[in-house]
Image 1 (tube, one colour):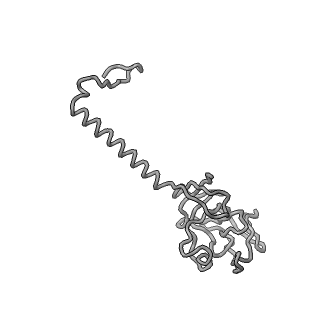
Image 2: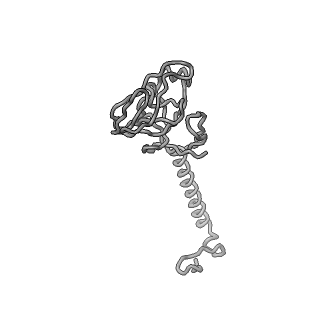
Image 3: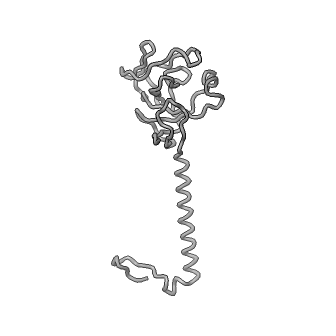
Length: 185
């Protein structure tokens, strides 16, 4: 090793005899392989925690969503969740409806009320429920009261959004939530 232009930092020189030995080459090879494996492990961890999703629903104004798995939602966040099973959901979205993406309109501990078909969170209007689906089926209204710990009132601005306004969806609780999303396209 020799002193480099940076003062006290050593610089490896390839023309030095000790780097030509098989022991040094083996050490460098093993070190490089270790770094590559650590990098691949980091990529694997990143891939487990994130995903790029494509939105096919008109209820969100984007088609690309960057998912962060396991992130706890905040008010206004986009959450991606597995909807509860129901006959209504199955008739409209099939046996395996896929993930739903909605905005968090109400947080645990906040109070949801309803006047007619208008929903309020802590007195602020957040959603208007339709009486029927596009095919004419009646829609039962979603829950009111204090949002339980670990649960959320979710919705969208779209008039046909299927969300917490309706009993078939209701509160969305943490076990159903895959993570939070960020609209990217």
